[in-house]
Image (cartoon, rainbow, N blue to C red; front, side, top):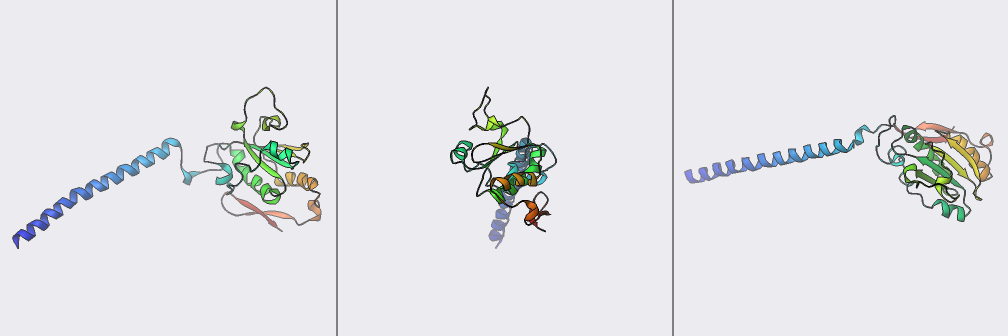
Length: 203
């Protein structure tokens, strides 16, 4: 009986160092993970629409839309198909662009099947002395956000600089697609969906 009790006590003592070691390893791993996130500036819980910090792709984070980037067609393909095109120049670490992301998402929602919506990170524009009309750099005016609307023939119909309203782009696209003016159609108003996103709904 004494031998059995001794064996049990020894097994219990052997388990304690292993459990302690496991806890230490887990704590070290957790601490390393936290340090890694902080060193890269990654903190999903503190994403803010009111600063110029990089929080990830603005259309995913602030518009809840992962289908905008990359665009389905290039500018060249869009022009070759004589398809109306909306170019949106942006940066992921721009407060103004973060706030404008939901407007771009709404443009895609209402016109994405008939027009080609192309968000363009200005960092991706190659530095050149000149550009052709089939290159995104041709229309860029060194400001973000910038919204350019081209008709099916490649004519520039609209060049909005800064945070333009959805209605301003909508008015141009209504003319492109020969739709009724807003005054003769259902009025759309904004309704808050969550902290960052809004949606347009019938009044």
